[in-house]
Length: 573
Ligand SMILES: Nc1ncnc2c1ncn2[C@@H]1O[C@H](COP(=O)(O)OP(=O)(O)OP(=O)(O)O)[C@@H](O)[C@H]1O
Image (tube, rainbow, N blue to C red; front, side, top):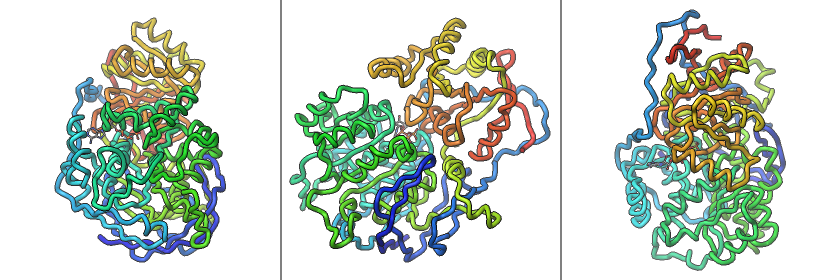
């Protein structure tokens, strides 16, 4: 498949997140020269979605509903015989990665093409979606050896798709369901280009580079540290100083000293701390080649706007490269490759990525499409609907396809005062060993922990009010199996990787389907089995049923009686 994408214009960038909107700089609009063939989407959840061309209107694009068909076929409201659902697998679950054939990897193109705004050709070999090994994806031998040492032998689907595209120097948006391996999907092409495991080329002038070459931004300390550990694991003990954490809550002067002493190639941090140290002149990122925003939809929310503004303006902006004469501020930003990642991508992120990137593409399961061709999905709507752009619609659409197909979803009702008891019965009925229970606020977490402990279930709490040390200790103990239940709030919903987690419980309703998706995604990681149970009050059932429609997954009504899960049937609303 051959695609040409091109022609860049200056304009105004309006960066709208699901929750907010802020102005950053230039906007690009692209002229599509040839239409891509959209490869089949991976998940059935995508089946109902439609991509409609909307470039002709010129004005702001309209967010409209995807109108995804629910895959759930509900009959009459009736109680069915007690259904024995598969028990969640315990700590030894197996991978479900099914690679197929070899791929034809295209060598990286000159960065000059980017900065000059020259049209690039995106080569997509369908075989690359099913590479059997990391070698087939063109990763350097040293890096492949290191991965094999760590027991990583076969790429996941999203890794097979993303690695060759990032190697072609495209700016990318990666959307793939929770637990599908997105972290390595962007780390591996970066480590192929920088650091001791990189590909060696005849004309390798990278030795001339100095300073930070990749900045990875994550919305929480926990996620930041998780990414750091992933990089350290691959680099090995002798080179782990080449990655530096810049997360909030940690000692800032120690971080600054480490930057000076170790001269890391990669920094991973939270927006506030990165921009703080950068503003203090202690972090030089102008020569940076890669900027990754992990959990991009959250990073572009209102809360982070000032810090993200600084990061987007400074990373990869070479000193002296003012280039206003040629392409304006765009040219300065184009020195870097921008990689945006999340399981949930609202249209506002697509719009932002178009504005920042050169030839940006969307990698979504088995499809790679120029962002130019991704338009606001507009199913049969009235004119007034089509003209209204609702942020909440954008958020809702973002969650479709964000969940692994292996997950089972249920909901049951209980009075507020009986929720912990329902949780206990749920854990026993499902024989869950590693449980994450979500609530919306911090205060009640302790009370739930206390009640669970009183019922003989080892539990602990995790939230932002705990100090950094306490947070990492709690998490480590939970991962080590010292506690059966982690009672937490939204802090743990994004990116947290506890592969053994076999049950997620919502003790409070998530705010919307996007929040549901990220919470739910803490279980069923990388093909493992996982169960999600939402315990809501009687009058909240309609919210769950609404999310069920928006997510296009079956969330079945149930109850837990006599040590068993009893599944009910229900009318579709
Ligand atoms: N190729 C692979 N082989 C085996 N394990 C892998 C591979 N790639 C990733 N993993 C493991 O899979 C788990 C999930 O990966 P990761 O955290 O990157 O998922 P994710 O898609 O970023 O999820 P989320 O959207 O929740 O952040 C991790 O434990 C990771 O180490």
